[in-house]
Image 1 (tube, rainbow, N blue to C red):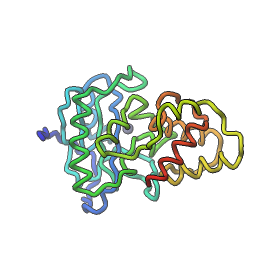
Image 2: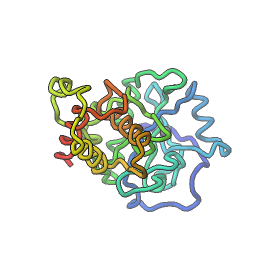
Image 3: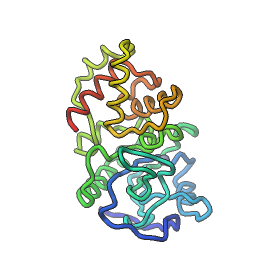
Length: 241
Ligand SMILES: [Zn+2]
């Protein structure tokens, strides 16, 4: 596939080894335009970057080599990994985002993303469960790539982790509260097993993690309340781990 080179200076001086690359993190740019996104990702003053940027027409830019540690994840955690810049590849998708006018990702953009993910997954042997969104690894601070990002479509292309529950069956359990305390604990433990990190059991923090889970796996209703549908999805996901 054709990749266009740009240059961002926003990376650690020390290179990394191929073996340290374990995770793909998907973002949206959250900026007005492609031009603004490029300027920001390449400006030394911004101190942010990613490895790839995909615009709405599906054009792919490489901002640095994969062996560079890009500054895209920030304070973050996933499974046993902490502060994920050193272990991940960051891919930015052009989209104005929740604050400036969140829109569907374009088909061309997604098909380029699928191609690039397939190359990276093969090259670095990235596990299905380690293809994540920025909100999955930093749920307190981030909402991207958000609930319009089609994780299921990626999973249909063997990218990322997905469940095998029937939509009709799931819908029946939507908004049905988990009443038993032991089921609530089970749901939280399941999130933990999937990779979500808990540094605090405070209610506000839990709600943010549940929202991140919903943005990824139950996009029709994002309210931060675990219901039976959420619990069933986690049980099914863990069967496929
Ligand atoms: Zn992001």
